[in-house]
Amino acid sequence: MKKLENKTALVTGSDSGIGLAIALEFAKNGANVIVCYHSKEERAKDAFEEVKSLGGKVKLINLDVSSEKDVEKKLDQVIKEFSGIDILVNNSGVNGSGIPIDEMDTKTFDITIRTNLYGTFFCSRKFIQHRKSEGKPGKIINISSVHEEITAPGNGDYNASKAGIRNLMRTLALEVAPFGINVNNIAPGMILTPMNQKAVDDDKVRKKAEKNIPLGRAGRPEEIGYLALFLASDEADYVTGSTYVMDGGLMINIGQGA
Image 1 (cartoon, rainbow, N blue to C red):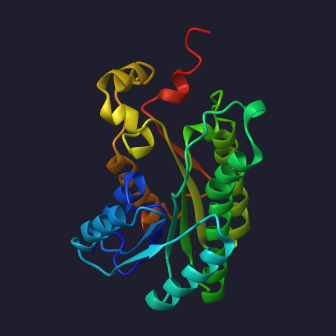
Image 2: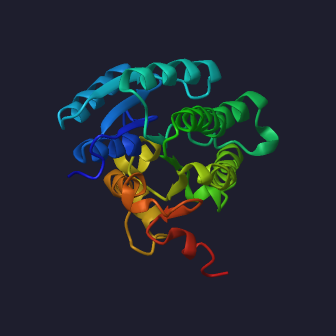
């Protein structure tokens, strides 16, 4: 039996990158998958077809995780259509602005916080309400970042959003443990996705960054998918409240030369 047979998973931001890799890994392992996208419809249709080709029931939805109303409406729809959601992956997010805090306008900060942090809050809240009402366990996996722990100048909006996700996860893990709901984070380092498009397109940019990574290379999206599969499976039933760093050793290398 496949690890996620008869399970339904909703993966936000699954039209590309890490989200798509997770959706594909889940589908390979028997899950029904709700593929979510925000703005790039053509790319999302391609992702949908790729996931669908692996078998299982697949649905494509347009979801703005920063909108409380949209999250409530769309999740109600898919819960009804699929007779429930067993696994939630909060992957949708935007990158940092690259603007120093004293030069950043409120709108810029708000967009990052609402997408990355509020989006995780809105989706998690709805998912937990659903699972509790059904009296069933569930799995929440948040894709945070090494920046939930380490900071970078010019990235204050992103750093704050990811650090917020860390403590939101830890709080939720305590609150929902009695209901059999597990909550964990995956904190990727440098992964070759559209969020790191410069490194994908330019070998010089990538190799310069890779010098800081003890394993000597950037990560691949499918590697995050493998870890997400474990956390979504019954094998991880005793795992909650933890961040799983997947960065090739980057975080433990930051202080070298100090």
